[in-house]
Length: 274
Ligand SMILES: Nc1ncnc2c1ncn2[C@@H]1O[C@H](COP(=O)(O)OP(=O)(O)OP(=O)(O)O)[C@@H](O)[C@H]1O
Image 1 (cartoon, rainbow, N blue to C red):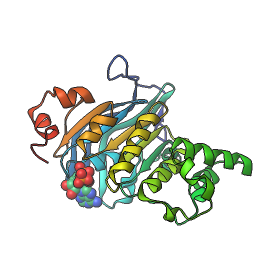
Image 2 (image 1 turned 90 degrees about the vertical axis):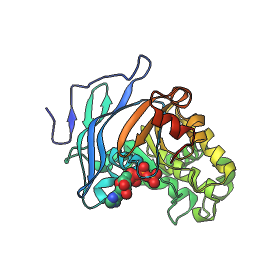
Image 3 (image 1 turned 120 degrees about the horizontal axis):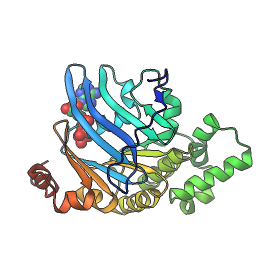
């Protein structure tokens, strides 16, 4: 039975294949904006420590699903969802749709990086220190260490280490996006959601972010929404293809791109529509 915060003791440790451990389990998920149904009976297992790409034509519901995973849709008037959307841990399951869920603490666990880099109008240092200052008790030395660690992890340290107290807005778009990734990981999330994180970036910065995504997956579970088929095939382990609010198919990225089961998937990944 569910507790007031949506956590239950009996974990469903369903695995999506022998090697994969499910971290986010989605079953029969429906979602609406007012009367409009945006997601129809979605079922998908998102594996731990892998990169999962959500692909599909505009309006198929990729961002809607991403925004339910960390409840960004709570901020959208009229947005509702029904079904199962759970975090699966060895010691229990957290119902991410539970009305009593502590959304603030959940968002420490499930960070999000948006399409357009959105640094705060603060210094580089203060952007990364923002979350830790809010959630953790650290000494100045510990905070310095954490900021350096996060900037290194996000592969932007070398470019900013001599100007940590300069405004973040002065960085290039690609540097700002890596700073936003550093800000997201500074609070120690388990999952990173990325909504078209490279769509506002030049090809060089895009490659830097893709390398970073690939690198980070040993420690984080990453879900990336992308319109870029090369990007999905370059940096994801798993791919889920959506069409008109439904999941058409999901599986190993290599298989989805070389031997999909559904004709619509084949047409989409070959650029025949969308
Ligand atoms: N705030 C909202 N209010 C009403 N309808 C919405 C809202 N946000 C999205 N929708 C609708 O829900 C459907 C799914 O949108 P969503 O943004 O999830 O698609 P998407 O696959 O991420 O598209 P894109 O690739 O263009 O970002 C679309 O028909 C969209 O118009």
